[in-house]
Image 1 (tube, one colour):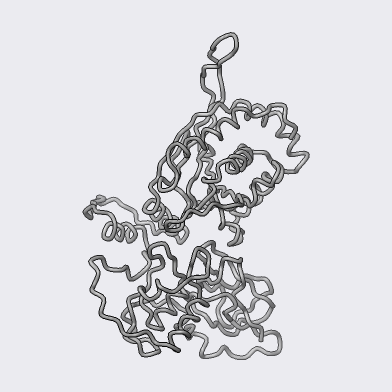
Image 2 (image 1 turned 30 degrees about the horizontal axis):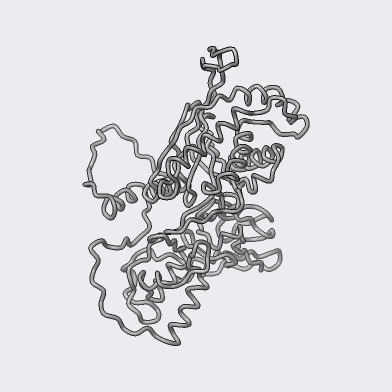
Length: 453
């Protein structure tokens, strides 16, 4: 009997949710054939069968969230198949699943009263499904969880932090404290599942505007958001809530860039085997300017600003499903133009094919969105948290422009483009945010048309 384990999908991914089983007990499977679909908070992917045989038993049911290394199923190879176990339909132990109802059990296994459900995000902290479930089972309240020091990324409480705390608590139980008065603003009991719930939650707890009901008329088609769209919606609303966005605009004369690319693109493709796009040139320039402006290559954690020493540029990619994903070009400042083109093209191809690894869409320190790809002149991009800024490049268009020459000013046809720079006004003021995007424009305008590709 061969165990099917939840594979490790990257350094930052410690658990996943079972979305759908593609096979059922008793079905034959081939080695490397996908048998189930899983989802992390980064990407969706498939788990292949490690060997050929018969799917004997499913250990974890759809909807459960389990840590890496969990036995998901058993596959019987030739000569050892037996009738499917009657226990295959039993769900994974409650410790490894998210609690579906806060009233499903009045007490935890240790006798403590069950507290309210722990939200996925509270203040500056994020709690994974596994940590929330363990806290629920052990009777740990949100207030108590907030006091536990976290050793994970950004101070996140990990499973090991929580288990270590539980051992300490067993050795020295906490003294009973006076009842805490009910707060005026109740703590949310669940992660919002839809954009409507997110908006309602913000209106109730943070935004001092009345709730409104809208009439949509009789002719309306209801379309359910897919999982990726719900994640995008949650992240965008969260970013707008956390970061006061300011956007500065600069119009750049990119005629030298357009002429140079047109001159060298065929030679570049023959030499390096990659098509040369404007996005590659923008990434190269951004990497240089981020080295000059380290305050923009940063993130915010509470009241701390973290200046990142490495430059990892995320490049927004539109998917065939009309969703958006942002794979990351790591160490962009260390790559030459050919390296940037290779990295961006590879990430873009695999993003559209759904083949990105979880670690390839995390860790970005700055983001580029080329809205000009869709013919848009400019945009006001939303910051990808916890970064502090994002740049949108608009469509390149021929326009009449004033050209300054030693002999005097003249009007000529030039290739012009708008740059839209959105930044977090908590830590980036207009002078710095404006100077950054102006510097990007200056480098594009001063592009060397005689440069060797």
